[in-house]
Image 1 (cartoon, rainbow over the protein chains, first blue to last red):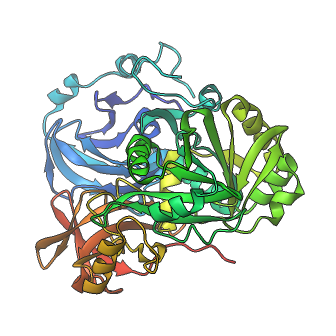
Image 2: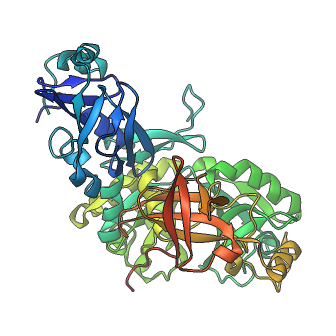
Length: 134
Length: 365
């Protein structure tokens, strides 16, 4: 698994977005989970809640501290990951796969333009180009 | 040594970096908060063994025929009754009966005592001690020259024997002796802050690297791992050990803090009369253990009953061994009974919590 997959968009706050049609799956990055350490609790919005780009989406708690998660895009929550609520460590072990947080129906595709490409995100977290694998 | 930011470093600083530690400022030192991860380190200590750099802790030495009586007057517990080679946990209190620090006093010789104090309190404690210490007792603060390495966990004794010889395995809990560890002069005690069997090894700074390395090598076959302050906190909280600055401080008294057992009220010690009054009157609030359902309580969160804030969380975390969100909190005495339902206000939401018996974790004997 790459530490920064090429096919995702990223926020500066270390969330990722995977787009399928007009549904966006949202999670936090490998870099973010590494910084947080062992995740022990995840708080997510209810289904059909609306979220706004760069506004609070929920909270991830590690052993040491609580961290806010910001929604990388606006829209309506169509699914929350029940598995990650039951097993918060999925955020650590599979941040881009089973550790996803919510799926959101996109309100405005134009917002994607405000997010970073994989290449820009790598630069943002101080990874040199081509050093994204792990 | 001291960095540009004014933070001190222990003699093991470079080794921590080599071991991949994440370093954070703590009590004026740059200390490892974690190496492989808090949960993995926590489990290693419960199941095998962990090694800790605690060189930031303070070490006070008291010497002379009058030392034991003098320290007995400073500390809430029975220091006068310590035999050579014995140690005891106790409190430094002020005259008002609140807690200046929690300490362990080791009788390391007939007329010699070692007092281990919290790193953040070294200066304050020295001033407090000097206020009451008679002139015929020699006092020496050796905090800056002393390194402290702890090995904790069910395999700690096997590991320590390889480095310090078989006699350390014969130490009783809270026993202390002089021994050579990896060729260095050491004071070795069967004490700790994890709820497991374990040892604390005091050596001069100059010997710290050698002793740490020898212990790591000796523990290689026993799954010994370095453990940072993060897991130290989860381990101590499961075992319900107080953390000074969180659970106890100069606004809390021993009785409400659940530390009445450390106060020998039939002797004279600084703060004795005030503590005796606290006990006779009964405290208005008490520290309790909480299990929180659906959120992690943290220091400073409100404890809520019937919609009203009635108390404060002093420590809270996820406990990896008990697999629950656990906390210590002060609540009104009427709400301190085991089984009482309360809530903890976490991010403006009242999350259900229950008063439970402590310790949260007790090792199998």
